[in-house]
Length: 482
Image (cartoon, rainbow, N blue to C red; front, side, top):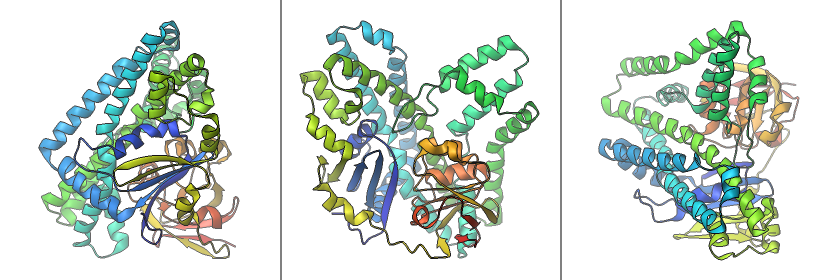
């Protein structure tokens, strides 16, 4: 059993519902096609929030093996990439055929066959798609160990790590922003503008999807985003984004030269930055597929007479049984899951539990000692930006409140996920309770060039909205300004 007294990996709490996460949870416990098992984990859902907990040492050790075999080995990496592209192509091809109108027209037998086929292809996508995720925690540790042999000063080490692990290609958010900026440049030519906007809507309708809810974004949404962009600024922003890959590569070359880093270290850094990019790039497929999960759920709700919201508390296995045998999950169990439920993976088995009994397992990991009178909070600097930033606190416990974020405020959250990006773009700095050097908050903050401190543990409890604070990235400290 995971010990609360050891160093823990904590992912969350963030907004989420079981159905959107159950697909990768199932793959995490199955016999892996790509060699390595995940360590024991607790995946806890409480109302609208979800949190994954694991032993950090066990996670790093499994990750080291995975990173060494599948990311560092040239032949294995090529196979992994080939398998991933094939799995994604199969999934995208079937998803192109899935519309509400088409699903409405199918007989029960045809619909069941369509769902089963999509279900198996999505699991196939996750089988290979989880490899970079596990590998990154190991790759991060391997690179740390190598760099610490050369660099003793912690602040200097963190600055180098930040630059060496920076992805060398665009994130999916940067791709979408770049595309939108180019549309802005064509705003005077209505015909071309409308054609480009139609194409953008088809390609990025899913951009605000999450593990909690799905939204179909259309013309009105993207027109509002375009109105916020000044024509005079579009060209400047396009140039800035397009320069990112070359600038990133140049920084790495200078570090290699100035610190005389050998080829082995540079290969580790390059492969880790690629794997980090890959982990983030997968979300384009994940959040697109979440849209199709909703399409299937609405059909299943209508065909099987189960409430749409209730189906969001089914697992992928539950859905498969419902479609195959008509077996529904008892309403009382669904109601319990809405309050609290837990996926517990231990000793090669996965149990989906409900009820108060799960709190005996979870409670030891949820208690945090908080001294609200402390003048400062310490964490790990993962993005330096400016040395010191002052601003007012904006605590967001859910990305559904991103509209409350004002430009120049300092975002404080348990952790961030893709649906926090709107708020992060307004932030002067980011502070999270959880996270590491390759966490979402770290990666996006580096992209935005703003300071970020993660692993602050008690930030959301010790700080208050409107409080004036200073984020000091030289010392990794958040100070309250009285």
